[in-house]
Length: 442
Image (cartoon, rainbow, N blue to C red):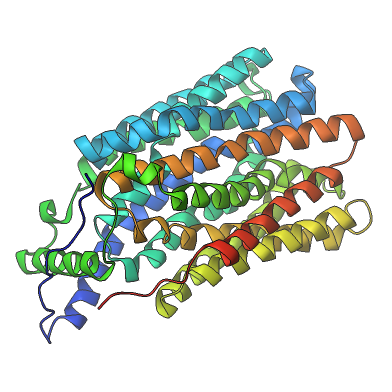
C-alpha cells in the first residue's frame, strides 16, 4: 500500500528566514567540503586509468579494446551493488556505509598496480565498481536528509563539482607522478599513480566514521534551536511537494522512474566517454607529454566545475530544473559533434569543443537529481535514486567499450563520438518532451 506525506507542516515563524540561511550555511561548511574531498578521491581512483593508459597499454601490450572493456566493466559492479548499498545506508546510516565504501575502493585501487593480465584488470575494475557502488547515490540520498528541495540543487552542484576538481587535480598529479617516479623501486610510473592515489582513500575512510553525522537531529555541532529549524523546514518542504511515492515496488510500476533512467543513461554515456577518452583526445591533437595532457584536462575540468556550481545555483534561484538540465545536455551534444568534426583537422577546435562538452554534460547532472525527489520519498527515494544511477551507469560500461572497439577497428574516435553526441541529443529531447514542469504546492 502506498503511503504519502500528508501531515501539516509547522508554519514558518516570521523571524526564521535569515536564521535558516545561517543554519544551512553552517551545514554546507560542515558537510560539503568533506564530501567533496571524498568524491575527489573516489573520482581520481576511478578515472586515473584514463591517464595511466598513456603508458600502461604499451608496457602491457594491450589493445584499445581491452582498455575500453576494462574501463567500462567498472560500471557492471555499480549495476549489481548500488541498490543494496543505498538501502543499507538508509538502514545503518551514512557514516558506516561510506567508511566501508571508501576503504574498499582505496585498497582495490592499490591492488590494481600489480595487474599483469587483462583478466586481472577486468576483475579489479569490477571490484572497484562494487565498492564505489553506493557512494554517489548514497550522498544524493544523504543530502536529502539535510536540505529542502529549494536548496538542494546548489548542494548537489557543489558536491558533484568535486568530480571536475578531481580532473583539475588528478591530471597534473598523475602526469607528474608518471614522469618523476618512473623506475623508482623497479615500478613503472603508472604503478606509482595507483599506489599514491589509493592510500589517501583508505585513510579518509577511517576519518569518515568520526566526522560525519547521519541525521540533523543527531548533529551536536548544531544548537537545539538550529536542529528544530531544520526539522520544521524539511517537514514544510515535504508538504510543499505534495503526494510522493514511498513504496519501492510501486515506484517501479511508474513509468516516470524508467523515463529518468533513460535520460540519465544518455547523459552518462557522454560523461563517461569524456572521462575515459578525454586525455586520449588531447594526445591525438599533438600533446604527447603526460604532464601537458594533465594540465590541459585540468583547465577543461575547472570550467566543468564552474558550470556545475553555477547551473545548480541558478536552478535553485529560478526554482526550475527541466530547462537547466536539457540545455546543459544540448551544449554537451553540440560540443561533442564539434570534437568529432574537427578531430584531425584543428587542435584548437577540438580542445574548445572538449572543454564545452565537459561543461555541458557535467552541468546537467546536479539539476537532473532534482527530478526524482519530486515524486519519491522514504524507501522509494533510497532505492529509486540508486536504481536510476545503477542502470543508467551501464552507459559508462558500454560507451568506453564502444569507443575502444571503434578506435581499434577504424583508427579514429570520430565515428564513436558521433554516436555519443546523438545519444546526448536524446537526453535533451526526452527531458523537453516527457518531463513535466514542476509547480510547488502551497
